[in-house]
Length: 116
Image (cartoon, rainbow, N blue to C red):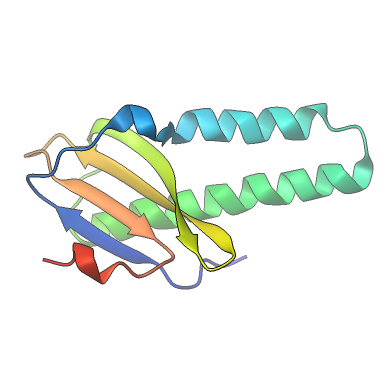
């Protein structure tokens, strides 16, 4: 698997309601639990693929954030949200560094309204 297009944005002076988003650790735990509880072999492979796809996206997102200035020292740990894109939803990651409070948003969907 390879994450295709990924777009990263640095935002300063923005406040958001973190409680409206899902912590990545919580989402990862949910995917892992669903995988662990699955009894059917075919469905188990599908669940594992979803978990691995999320991990790949997470790693690529953190790397993309570092490429534009994130130091990876989180003031607010990575959270995820979903964007409507046609008939489906696309995930994005967002976190806040503890440097000067810069926020980073990374998605597979381009969001030109977030560009400086």
